[in-house]
Image (cartoon, rainbow, N blue to C red):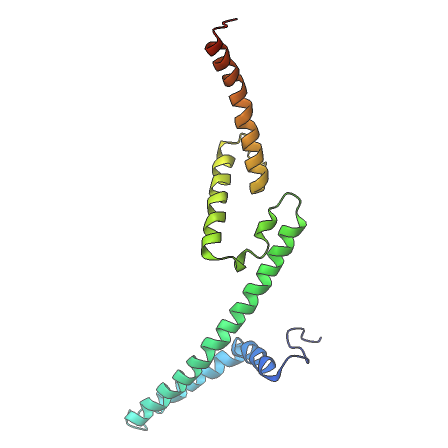
Length: 169
């Protein structure tokens, strides 16, 4: 089976990073790292636990840690992008879903806070809604809430108008 994750058309550094990410997450890589540590520990008495003996493991682990930070970040960025694309596809495909959530990760922090306020209001409206199985987009919820509010106001406005006009029928 062909590995789809490693493409021939990708630049060499990208292919190498993909291969390194895949290999370092393997059982073989863990076994090798564990073996290196055991060998280092066993050779301690042979080298009288010297500064050079300690420097070897410190230097090796520092270099590997430095490289792994970039491999881990690369893998997380790629995975996060894939998840965002899948979520964007779902939002775009669902009728009634708010399209403002497509590519929401590209919004500024201020814009995200505005959306958070909208969704907090949606959650509040949902808590007050009698039908727990019904969900709305932000726009639908706001429109439905405004419609309900207007329906409640109209009878109260009629009564207030009658009271102001002095007509008490």
